[in-house]
Length: 367
Image (cartoon, rainbow, N blue to C red; front, side):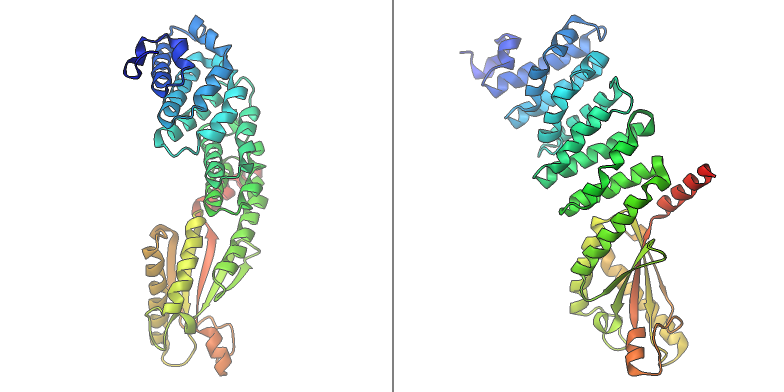
């Protein structure tokens, strides 16, 4: 048996099948370099491996993490230089890449696997890449959330890179309800990114899917922040979350109470899991006291909520605030109960401006 420190002396085919991971790694590196030197996609080396899809699949399934990374890089070189010949191996290779490589713990493997997805799309013979989309979407049923999230991200990359020109975006859109219904928040966050990319191409056609996203987020908020009232408003286009100021703040105070910090921490986690929305925070008071003072107090309270959310990684660019004092009552200020209801902070969760502009543009095209 060859010395493990000098595996390069072993023949290439022997290294590919070796039990020594260093031997396999060496073979993958050599093959990748050889593919890059081929003068055309019709080269004999390309054609030889195009007839060995199981060998190629073995590179993605390599049990050694370092060797697997080089194996996926080798696959990238094969498809890049093998063009349509290499593209025909997709149905054998891609399911294993989707299952074992896109969600790898190694950054290099993940990056190479995602590159391989795009290369297969580029050299797909069938317009729409339906087979490739199916290879990836099949893994949305995987048991491990990280595998599901990685494959959703791969679908997003496909739509972003090729859109309706090469990828069947309506087939991809069929995956979105399953993603939004997933129990894992990271999967749903990836789903939100996918929905934004799809919206660029099918616009208003994605409206039912986006409405489902709002429904799911509203239910999550009800569970995460039972201290607040959660409801759909503006014909379902927005979610309003109402916090009682008596829970958030002490009397005539802008400092958040310990109870409110716990509730707002859970609220921030939901916002970070749904990054495709904007947030408008409005402070309200009752009519007791001077109007100007109440307006200032309501605005300072809204600022306290914004600052807390910012400290919990909610992006400032998503948030706006206002304080309207007693000007928008929801109950009778003539009773103690009514005044208590009017002292509140409302948070509106809205579609991002980018999504609104895209929806308007799509509507204009359809006129």
